[in-house]
Image (cartoon, each protein chain N blue to C red):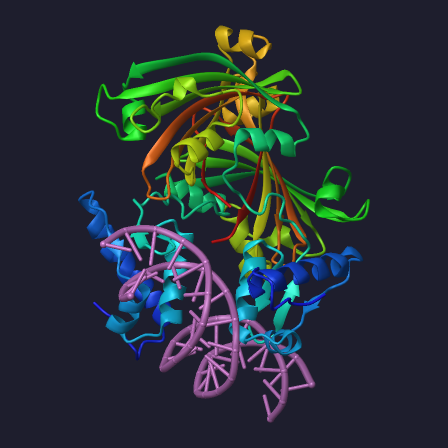
Length: 243
Length: 243
DNA sequence: CAGTGGTCTAGACCACGGT
DNA sequence: CCGTGGTCTAGACCACTGT
């Protein structure tokens, strides 16, 4: 298992893959695993030290290794649940939980913005947005209710699309709009009667209310999302790391 | 404003600071700001391109810039609310929200572990842990109720410490245990009568229930935390980014 | 075509930890 | 003292973008 110099895969990616595997088997027996030193890795794989460091930086961001100046590099037990906290389409999230994802479009309207949507999307008052309300299902059972607001100017003819799948994918592949970062706010509150009816729970049950604003790589806001999650079916999981 | 070659601050940190400032003023007027090319920055500041790239990598992780191959590097609007999602002591979090942080120790016991604590902390059954229950205050008003479980072997005489401040700081500076990564799980549920009494809310009110396991850089679990948060006083904010 | 960022090399000096 | 990771240089070739 070594580096293929004829592959089109960058050396540092190849090295990271090799090391990931080595760390996995080495830490399986609860043994402490000292990663070979940077010079040693460079010599062993016929690479420059800079390339080795690039590979190690990858693994460090994944939480797989940690370094101690003057001592060396060591394997951490693999705690990377979701490779740290990352922005993931709801559809993929469902699959990751072992559910068959589904979606029922409750309504799709084209309307003029009002606060707080104007603020979140940084649009002028009365600019047009699509309001998409969907019930998201896991294995056919309701999990959450979502209202997405999208600037109509950026995704014309959204009403012609198949909206039962991943909105993230539609935006990326049909409109070239890449969801890149997001701000999420979570609160607990009681389900209203209309929410409860769609989610098939009792009115007043505690639910998680989430607001999310999603941004393009440029920092331009592209989606404002309001959602209500059944607390008996869904919990929010985050992996955090020290800055 | 340039790079001080006699400073002990690394060049790439200095350059990042300069660029951060430049981006801030440039994007203030909603103008698109193309960051100078890597070669140009290298020439202008008398640095190698590798050093310039190190500085840009910093800013990219902060969400301040994005790159497009063949085109260039551009400033994103600053969306870094908390420099992405990071693990932060509760005390510091409170201050960030503009509250005067406070803590009331409800109880501190030394007891033998039982599931689920044994699982989370990876301890043998009956190993000793400290159970620390604290009421966290913001500007004197209850915000949340926390139960921390810590392996007694790793922090002997915890009962001699002042526990009204930051537990994270005590663990780091008194025991050399650095909280590094964490897994958090959030659910909505109703407050029990005892929780409600301490939090000064009505029994049955919706609250956020959070479980957190915190790990050292080695990946060893160091703290298991259960907490209940008042939904009228606290909301959880996360910044996410695409992997 | 020229300019951009992505990858890579072969050196160098430093501060730190353990002997 | 030597080995470690942290920082830095001065080159190089590549794939991609726009003209």
